[in-house]
Image 1 (tube, rainbow, N blue to C red):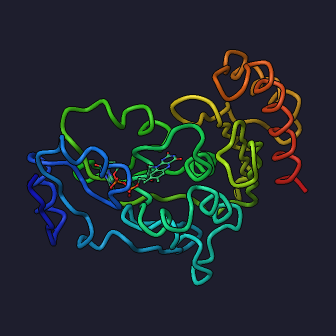
Image 2: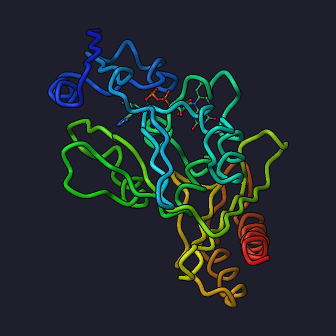
Length: 249
Ligand SMILES: Cc1cc2nc3c(=O)[nH]c(=O)nc-3n(C[C@H](O)[C@H](O)[C@H](O)COP(=O)(O)OP(=O)(O)OC[C@H]3O[C@@H](n4cnc5c(N)ncnc54)[C@H](O)[C@@H]3O)c2cc1C
């Protein structure tokens, strides 16, 4: 396997015709015998966290543990979700970009980022892509692409709730709600089942029952070895009610 460590984004993009991006390597390592080349993102300066004029920008090569650093005043519930994402050792290695590329619906961090209506900057793309869209398209392209950073607006309020087999386990069912600072509709994401967390249609603040029903319908077939569809459908509606109540209080 060839190992490249470019110093610039331009160099990295050229090398992506030969190999795949290597970030923390925690998901790639088991595949190492099948990879022809990797392009290490470590020296591209993609590990910055900036908060300016109400917008948060985080570089894709930022380690998950860094999101917990109190120096950066990230929303407390985002930091909580980052802590639940993985154990300390993994959080010190795994990056935001790698997590977005590999996460399934049980990822607390990607669920919360989705509820925050996060957008993603991809090298060579003129405009940012909604995370919601990227999650559908992330593994379908022939050529590897490079996520540079993500961005989201600081929310008016944000809350995350989950049910798991134990407090530190990944969720069987989860929900996050965001009250936007600009008074628009509430953004809600649900997770715990499937390949990725899902956004519900945005709801007005007084439409709690409609949001509950929408969530229950989305999980009406969400059965697997971890939980039945009946269980998930009922619990997700309760979690949606709770997160909406929290962001409205
Ligand atoms: C012991 C252990 C337990 C784990 N448990 C879980 C678990 O419970 N749930 C879970 O979801 N995962 C789990 N993982 C997998 C892994 O930790 C996560 O998926 C992690 O978030 C990947 O991040 P990374 O930075 O290490 O990515 P990498 O391994 O470096 O890369 C992962 C993928 O993302 C691509 N990629 C990385 N950065 C970028 C970028 N900036 N732009 C474009 N593509 C990029 C890579 O090319 C690769 O395809 C576990 C891993 C280990 C070792």
